[in-house]
Image 1: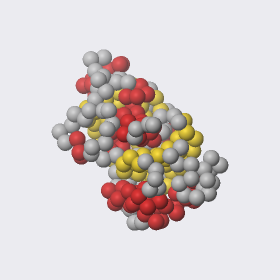
Image 2 (image 1 turned 90 degrees about the vertical axis):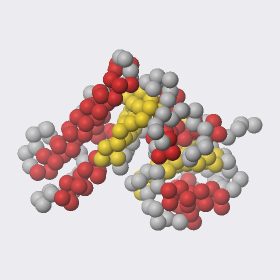
Image 3 (image 1 turned 45 degrees about the horizontal axis):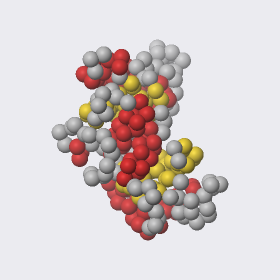
Image 4 (image 1 turned 180 degrees about the vertical axis):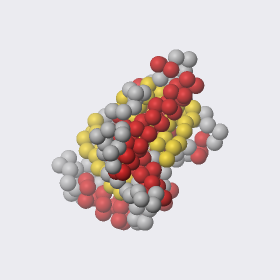
Length: 265
């Protein structure tokens, strides 16, 4: 089976693939202070509970694919693969890795690995033109051309960042639970903040996507809009532009990149 690891700024998502099917997944906090040995113990604890894997670390794992937006974590995961999975083929997404997606930005090396991986999966699953909206620490909008090229994108503060900023900078405001309020017209401070965050972000998504679509295709209706990321379900019901929800888009992209870089015998 293939172990895929997507390291974000806030959370790390792990997925276990049996062929093309994701059979298990986990979400843990990203901690740049964890050493390779600590990460190995964490992986063993998670995967040791799965019935398709053995008790020893690495049992049942035939390959590993990793992308990370946190360089220090990528360094430690590289050490994990070397020390604990030495006989297992591993693909770490970094410059030089084959993705099959041309990158049209001014400096391709500065584009986050997860954003390229999302584009890979979007092209494979839906074709182009497409826009991927990833609701993570930041809300990212990534444009894929009709020819399957990564055309660029936009980055906005994420939902949780905005909530935290309100709580820190607002004298009478505090951190709130991210749930849908009774009405867009809040009848108390908590509901007013929830309404502003939820409907404000839905409006942001619709606005950015509509503008991107007009630049990306002659007919904006031809553009497929895919939502992913841990906070996507919160906005799905309020946005008018999202066509598809694929929570495992990055993990699927990692599987595809692994297959394009590891020869099958």
